[in-house]
Length: 67
Image (cartoon, one colour):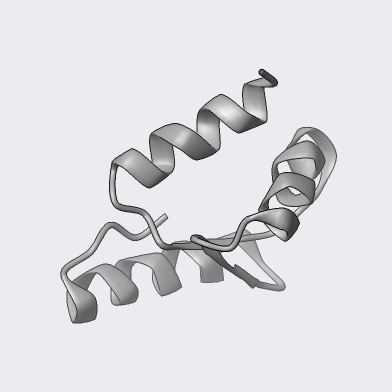
């Protein structure tokens, strides 16, 4: 099992169904794995600060975990 597989398994167990982020550097393997993942939807942003605001808004509106 790869580290990204374990990470995705933990996120799914925590109820995460959406991730907001900016791929780059050490996160490339995670975003590659998310491309194959059907249970977690990925939202790409142009700035990491925007991802934080989107995750917060998502959590407030849906009551689910925002990542």
